[in-house]
Length: 66
Image (cartoon, rainbow, N blue to C red; front, top):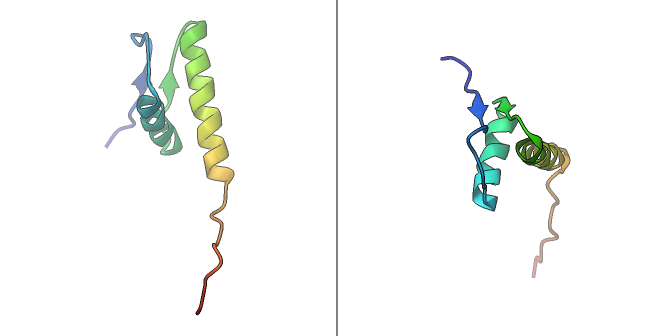
């Protein structure tokens, strides 16, 4: 199967759910293509969030063994 490229050049608005989907695609190696300041800013935000999410380690919560 080939690589999926995500072309955002026809996008004028994206909500938080859409950004979350793009983060998942980016984490899986899908390149995000964008021209123009607004679209590039969206890609920068999505890729920065994906990078931060991948650096965060799960936190073990204390158990209450009563």
